[in-house]
Image (cartoon, rainbow, N blue to C red; front, side):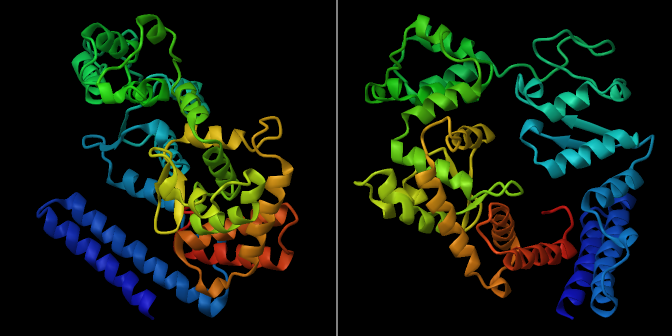
Amino acid sequence: MFDEVASTGLGKAAEALFSNALPGMGLAVAFGRFAAVRTGAVAKRRKAIEEAGAPALDDTLDLVDETTILIAKLAEPDLPFVVFVEDLHRADPLIFDLLENLLRRRAPVFLLTTTWPGEIDASERLQHLCNDPSLERDIVRLAHDRPVPVGFPDGASMGELALDAREAIVRHYYPKTDGAIVERLARRYNNPLPIELVCHLRAYRRHAHTGQLRITQKAIDGLPNAVRDLYRQLWDELPYTTQCVLALSTLAMPREAATWHAQMVKNAGMAVASLIDEAIDPVKAFDDRFVPHGWVRLANEWLRHFNEPDQLAIAKEETLEEAGLLDEDIIKPFLRSLADQVSSLDWDDEDGTVGQNRAWLTIALNEKGLVADDLAAHAVLFILQQLENQPLEL
């Protein structure tokens, strides 16, 4: 009953909010009414599930499809709907699905996106879209280092971050650096992130107290071009135990989730701490407060994720047999400890993203033969119950 009231109330609130926030705007009122209809539909669907079992397949709500339909309804040839996405290369699969749906629908929708230099070429999905012959007339790429497409004025692109702004990044970390070195490094990269990463490399950071970036022009020219290669250098500078902790954390990240449960990783880490290093302090080593800044971010109270996909990819590589950082003597007891923890869960106490994370982890561990089938079935049931509320959010 509470869910139904809350759902209906949300719909009315959405209509009221959009109506009052932009008085006289028919588009906003239409969106509010649409929200009311959809939230009311959720309540009716829940009631149908309770009274008559599973709903028909054609009655299933789909977040991406519903949003695509909504935007297409609002869009008019003389008043196109504009969608702006910054840093598209960092978008999650849900956003990609929505944008691709809108693009292929050929509705009067204008998609405006930005990416870092070189990121489109590094993304398989973006490459697929940009090279699709059926979309050739629908996609226009503007790049600071490429000729302007026909029909666009000269200089039509965001351009590079200004040189003086890139120089300011270097001076922020090393204010007493020689001007020629500052300029050389600022010209080396047109993206501010690699400049910051270079400034964090231990070889230069150990002289930070002097305020000078001690690097030669030849060394600047020899720096890696790719951001991932710079992250690899930073990874190599991490303490061995920190590398192990971050690599082990990826084993607690099921493929359907981008996060790991900090406490579960810490508990499992206790079981293998002495195998990593006999002198290790397991309480401190597996406490993410002691992980060097810039690698781990809090998703919520319990869940953690890497700051950048490149960091995750590097840490995952260390779990491969050929990497040599972690061997089976460490990985197997770590996974068994995770399995013991999920096996003792009470699913009635689980909800939200934390519960989803644990459910996917349970299924992943079942595939490895570490969790019983009946427990995996409970996890599947839990995920299906979550899907009732918000499809595709999982």
